[in-house]
Image (cartoon, rainbow, N blue to C red; front, side, top):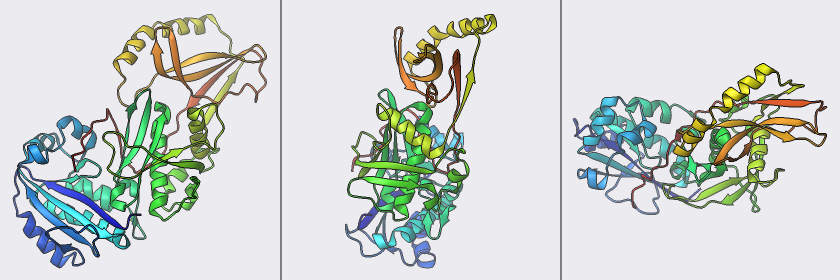
Length: 407
């Protein structure tokens, strides 16, 4: 954790304030938050909880709100009218917070409560500069103030995961850990099927940092769900074969456009078996959360089955067009492909398409081969059920838009 923590919230007025936000701030500090000191300028090394406030009015040039398109991914509790009206806002009341690390949690809680009160009384909307999100006061209260335990937040309620296409694969990265004085976390190159699981893993690892876990110098880290105080939903949703444990390798992450201005830790899976990093990632997530994989032996290729196969294959040209245009966030295409086995049979398994050039498909195998674990007789078909995990964290699954402002 950093020795000194700085972050920024704001309230967008609709379009101007109905009550003076500075008067509301001063009253709240004197009556509700006496330990938070109002200053004209924040020092780099604050010795106590501090806040500096200012009103900006030339917003379209200096502090423009997100576009209506962005708000569909990053706006919470907003009506259609509010999403349209905030585009014409004329004022933003900006609150910059700073405090030493010893005050990290009480200061964050105070900041969350203070900005909500100002938004309610001015009938404005809350902006989180670190996560690039806009909230109605009610949505803010539910998300940011509702989940604290023993004075420590469920950090997934204070952050967001950007899950977006980055080349052939998805990239998942947190935003908002600056408010905890801790690094943000990234997982590189996930298939679509496991992208959300990678995001959940990021939230779990971030929570271990919040709760004070430290790391070995060589980067080895054992994540155990049962040692995390806010992991009850994930523990309850484990499949019977899920261990609840992940043996991670921590690396220095590299920043890309749109990433937080913060240190970044990459979660890697070097300690798992697999022919490449995607197989290792799949192994880690499968052992952590568990999986369901059913096998059907002795499938006969009857006339009805072959007719159904021809019907589905006829859809391939249209699917190819859709893939080339670009699938919508969260969409993916699976094909069932035959793989020859050493005993002369075939094992049919699901493959998630990641590249499709003319008649050649490149993808990620989404089944664990069973050829060496079951008695093969003729043909073997496989069905993999997706994992559904409960999480309170927020995911933005969309085309990545760089909305970070210049410092």
